[in-house]
Image 1: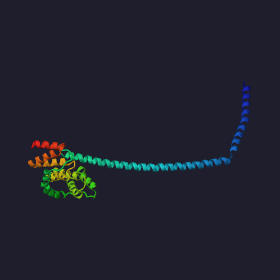
Image 2 (image 1 turned 30 degrees about the vertical axis):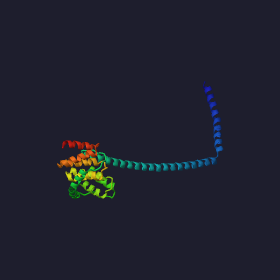
Image 3 (image 1 turned 45 degrees about the horizontal axis):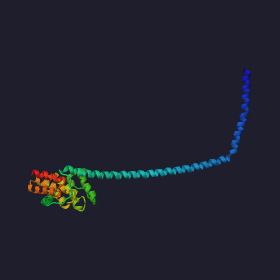
Image 4 (image 1 turned 90 degrees about the vertical axis):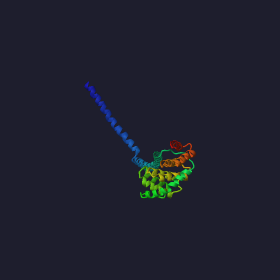
Length: 268
């Protein structure tokens, strides 16, 4: 048993002794067949390719970075423009909400001005001039020369800063400086409402009547005429109040202002 085992070990030793030199000789033959020069050339070529790919990758990364910067810049401009547009829309929304909250009527249809409103405005002109001198004692924001910018600044004094005296001063200066602006009806209406809130009803009637006389096609004309009638009623000038309310109904039969005027007439 033991002798057989020893014989087996001896056979394995002989096999290993023969196989090792053969494997070494085969490996040496493989290396020599490649040659050192061929390997160096291949390594050099691979290095060149690798360097070129690295440069190309770097250029692509730089281009992607530049493109991303442009995209970020455009996205920032879009966000800024969107914010400004939202601010404009919100400002207009607040403006009309503020008008609705300060008034008892609603915006009506377009119509021509009335003689009774003109008469009421003429009666209040002198009082308005005197009140204007008092209002100018409050500092108004400096005008920029741009009608829209200055109008928005004046309205901001009402909606945001609640500085009503300064708003009156700013709007009075604005209506004189920009007589051709499309915001004239709104500016005069604002003045009428601001003076009404201060209890200066003659001044208020003057500016409401101005809307009716000078801007008959403005959506504010029906409500402005109705406000003149309200002021005449509050001044106990029943005859003139009736005439104005009747004119509202005649000129703007389908408007909310006409409905309000009808209710007022029923109570006179």
